Length: 114
Image (cartoon, rainbow, N blue to C red; front, top):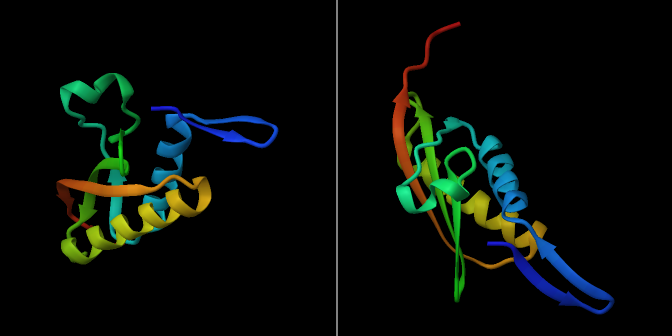
């Protein structure tokens, strides 16, 4: 899924790894998300990076993410925040449109008192 654009002085190619690293950084900024997990469906296994995989569609990128969320966090609002943060980061930093962000919560992680 390397994205290419023609610029005035040549070509710009954005590697899929660049997008997945940005997605991971965006997720890290959301409180309540413990980590991204690498359980990825079969068709995407060769292209995965830490539970993040990307499809390039006609209307934009479809970004899939598998996460573990802390059990002290409300799942729905946290996932909405993750979706918004990923979309905002990818569109503003890289300039690629995001069609959707699909989140799969693989596990709730019990938070232990410090």
